[in-house]
Image (cartoon, rainbow, N blue to C red; front, side, top):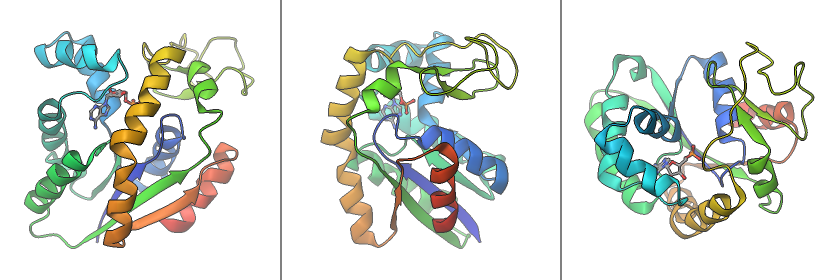
Amino acid sequence: MKKELIMVGPPASGKGTQTKKLAEITGLKHVDTGSMLREAVASESEAGKIAKSFMDKGQLVPVDIVARIIKERLSKDDCKNGFILDGFPRSLEQAEILDKILKEIDENNEVDLKVIYFDIPVDNLVDRIVNRRSCPNCGAIFNIKTMKLKNDGKCDNCNTELVQRADDNETTAKSRFNTYFEQTAPLIDLYNKRGILVKIKALGTIEEVFENLKVVI
Ligand code: AMP
């Protein structure tokens, strides 16, 4: 049966890190709207220019841009056997759009759809964000405060110089949390009512959280 997972949780709750690990062992495609939008920004496309102005403020990028990107992505062959959505949907409006897209692409498939909610206290997450660095080459994510890197400032996997995301600063991070509580958190109730929400304890080491995740998928 085709497996579709949707990761929901506050910024820096570990969705990206856990999804990468899960994609590796399951072969499900990791579909991450944040990364796709950052690619659009880097390419300086029209959509990228518009997206940047919202991302810099910690706000949601207009829904038509995101809907187009996600529809194209989920319709590709490599998503045929299933995928993990990380960062989409992020509002009730986007959830409705996703319903329509899935209806279209899954016309003839039997699907196991689950929403994983990363349950974590938000107190220390801004700190996680400002200490987060990522590898522009392999996409690995590190916390320079809590992890001991083999080479300072370099990726442990491929030794590339790590970078900090433009929106991983304190001001934008705070705004991203407001956006999350106002627009994204209502999804928890929506999917709970549909009976497809699974909550995992997302506080702990990467390995501990991964164990919690593997049990429920
Ligand atoms: P993320 O990498 O998931 O933290 O996303 C970074 C930024 O990209 C967010 O703060 C939003 O500005 C934008 N973004 C990512 N996914 C979406 C989405 N589904 N809808 C609107 N904006 C998004």
